[in-house]
Length: 551
Image 1 (cartoon, rainbow, N blue to C red):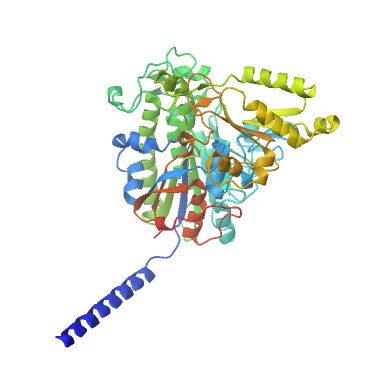
Image 2 (image 1 turned 60 degrees about the horizontal axis):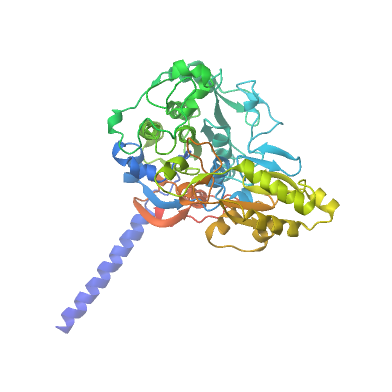
């Protein structure tokens, strides 16, 4: 009996060793080559619950394909404020936050020039594909690298990088400093994809051909719901008081005759506020894959695609609108069409895709208020009057403040010196004053933000979004769902869950199948992609690779 027992133990050890060896051998024989193409998709203003709210309306080849074949990070958040488009795109691809990459908002007050600056404007470059100043753009204000930049460096500049978006910032910032091209859509009376001399001197033939095809004009047609509007049960009523709509149409209700409405709504620019702008973006992305031969060899290329129209539609109609539901139904179909092209042109199992958003959005406060949820609109005019009166009474002049923007107050350092005032004392006095105003939730001085180490709460988000050279002297936080905006449509920018919680889906080569409810941060995406490619992390990345996502 003892001999049999020893024999069984020996056999068990052998089997275990053989299994371990087999797993190791199998692992070592796995395809370790990097994907031929990395596609980074950003859906502008996509809240996480759009995946779940509209799930039953999606087909099997778009969002559901990513979830069914790939990995779903269900608790993905932005880890800084403000949650706006430019810092969102920069943070996704740099793995960093405004504290380091410097893109603190879409526009911000420049303390050196004493002017508002735009995140991507660059007077040193020339427009290409247009004569309009809309082409004078580059990534020069972004201070750090993206993972696309690191891929360029790793491949000795042989891997291509192309950025595409209706918005210039949505194309330029993700593609980084070393991109071969970034293209954005110029509406108005042109309806063309353009770029700048930062990238090239003239449009490539495939871009010129695409613009000449009049594809944009083909979308100036009727926008009606894709399915019977009565089946759109995941959104509010079509006729309500919470939507903006279009000039020339009395109500914000389906259908919309875009050809008839275009003259009063920016001509081709009207497409930005419809799902057809997303379809046009998909068309152009497909043309880029073919025109640039992306993913055609063994050197990894990067394609960034940002769907901007979801943001324009959300701002106009609100997150609970029939227009939003229809837009995501149609975007799902565009994704399916796009993935089929990737399957054919690059090859199934040869590319990897991630999809996320640059921020979420709040429900229309008027709608929330109607349902007894605390919410509302800020009276900035009255707040400014009260603040000026305080400054005049305390300091004899309102000129101690130079600028108020992006929920930040900038002090006039020259004026403080003339008056012999301490900047820290003035900051503290302003915080005390602002905290007496309606719907100011919190206020922080520059001194508090740069001298302490916050690890949680809104304070940590502010700190990660605060750039010491570019940000202001006092930072303000408003009450939840209180916004500076019109009475219709949705907006974003806060550190609350409706703005920070966004989708994060991965699928394709090197990606596991699964899901997690563990918290992930937007800054984890770039280091995860870098780990997959075996390249350096972006130079200011603070995120961590999501090891459980990767095979």
